[in-house]
Length: 270
Image (tube, rainbow, N blue to C red):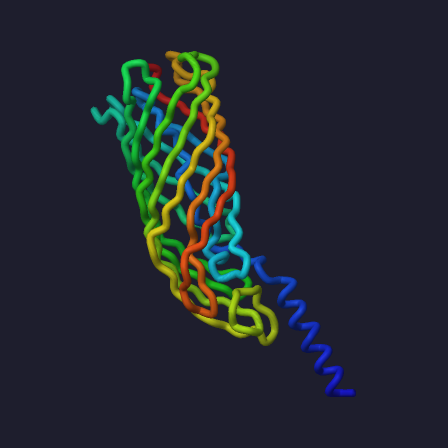
């Protein structure tokens, strides 16, 4: 009877661990910067909030490699004639919730119009940061950096009130990450830690591409006032993420998700 009761308790404990598996979310990795590649052509500060497609590094060790919509806030500055640097953009973003241990990520890039009618714009931006954190018995540290190139095409005539834009971008992110996490009874996949759950450590590194595209509605732009208007963008993103099984890195897995962001801008009247 004692042996049977002990066996039942072990079964219940294992079921409890599996019921909790996949809950921990650490290390947010956005698939796109989410910035607009339309050159403002005047000193401009834009503030953004919303959700961008991406994934969590903790997903790399779980059985189901799920993508996610990552909450993101960002700020971007285009100094234009203030610094005699038309097209230069600098800023920073923070993606993920506080519980997922995000970090502030600097960005620097360039964007420019491609034609006299300002119908087509393009640009590129570099980004990178270091992050670390722990939650529910798991911990991670990660360094990543990359470059993104983007295009923007205005689909409707120039308007001071509403314009529809088509946007797209592609990026490559170099990543090196390491972590300690609990695994299932077979030592294969990461789970939330419980009593007697085995611990393992792992590393993952590589270069991971992603693409992003969608539609954006620009409003109240091109007016000679301090309010430069805003942008409501709906995007879909896809890319690859690292995978770790039994503590060893395996081939990257694809993912896809969507996002929506709202950006408002202020700056010089001219």
